[in-house]
Amino acid sequence: MVALSKARALGLWQFIPSTGYKFGLKRDIFIDERIDPVKSTKAAIAYLKALHNIFGDWNTVLASYNCGEGRVLRVIRSQKINYLDDFWDLYQRLPKETARYVPRFLATLHIVKNLEKYGLNSINIDSPLEYETISVSRQAHLNDIAKNIGTSEKILKELNPELRYKILPSDQYPLRVPLGKCEELLSKLEEIPICSPPKSTRIVYHKVRQGETLSTIARRYRTSVKSIARANNIRKNNLIVAGKKLKIPQKGAVYRAREPKYKHTSKYMVKRGDSLWIIARRFDTTTKKLQKLNNLLNTNLHIGQVLKISGQKESPAPATKESLRTYLVKRGDSPFRIAKSHNVPLERFLRTNNLTPRSKIYPGQKVYVE
Image (tube, rainbow, N blue to C red; front, side, top):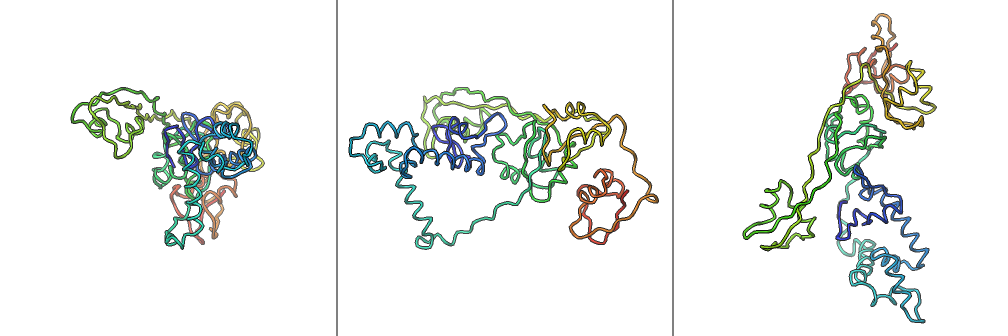
C-alpha cells in the first residue's frame, strides 16, 4: 500500500515521517517501514491506544488520528463548560476533512459488518502468500535474487514492500522469500551481484508550453507521468495549462557491480547454540577474520543469519565414492537437511552427488555421505 497524501503521509495507516519514527517505524535510503503492512499495523495499534489514553472516546481518537491530537486538544480547550468529551460536541469546530472522515469511517465499518446486506459477500479474497524469512547481509536487487531462486521480482516486492528501491540494505536484513526458497538462496547468495541505491532525487522545473501534455513532458525528461503528477499534486483528471511551472523529479540510475569474490568462500547459516568463536574454530579461522569478512560490528549472531566463511586453505576435495557411505532418502528430506545431519557443507554434498541447488531428490533415492 503506497498511497501518499499531500501531507506526505504514507502507507496503509497513513503515517507522516515524524509520527512513524515516534512509534518505531524506521526510514532511511533503503527502507520505509510505513509501507510494511505488518509493522505499520503494529505501530498504528500503539498510536491508537496512546490517543485513547488521552481522549477516552474512540470517535475523537479517529478525529485526532486524521488531523493530529494537537489540533483536537486546541478545539477541546476552546469548548464551553458543558462539553461532554464526545466527538459530536467538536464536530462543527474541526477541519472539514476530519468532520467528514469520522462519519465515513463509521459508515465503512457498518458496511464491513453487513456485507451480505449490501451485496458484497461474494467478493473473493486472495489467500496470503506463504513465506519464510532468511537473514541476508548482501546489498542485492530483488530482481537478481528472484532470477537466482526461480521466482519473480513482483512476488519478492509484495513480500518485502518496505524496500524503497527494491534493494536490500548491506547490513543484516530479514528477507521474506516464498516458502521453500531459503536453501536455494543460501547456496546462490555469493553469485548475486552487489547493487547500489539510486542517487538522491534531483528536482528541475519546467514551464508548460502550449500543446504539451504530462506524457510528452515525461518523455522529454526520461521520467514517468506518475512521478510528475505526484510531485505536483496533480490528480488523475487534472489538466495542465500553458505557463504553469512543474517540478520534474529526476532520479539517478541503479548501478549493479559484482564484488570481487573471496577465494574458497563458502556460506554458513547460524544455528541454535552457535557463537562466532565456535564457528571460527569449526572452520579453522578467527573471530576477527569472520567479523571483517561479514562487516560485523560485534560478535552477536542470531539464528538464520548467513555468514561468509573464508579459510586460508581450500576446502578438502570430496572423498571418492568407494570411501563414502550410502544414505537412503526419506520423505521430507532435502539436500540441506541431509548435509546438516551428517555435518557436511551443503556445497560439498551437492558436488559429491552431482546435484545442483535446483535438483530434486526423492524418497528411496541413494545418495553418498561422508
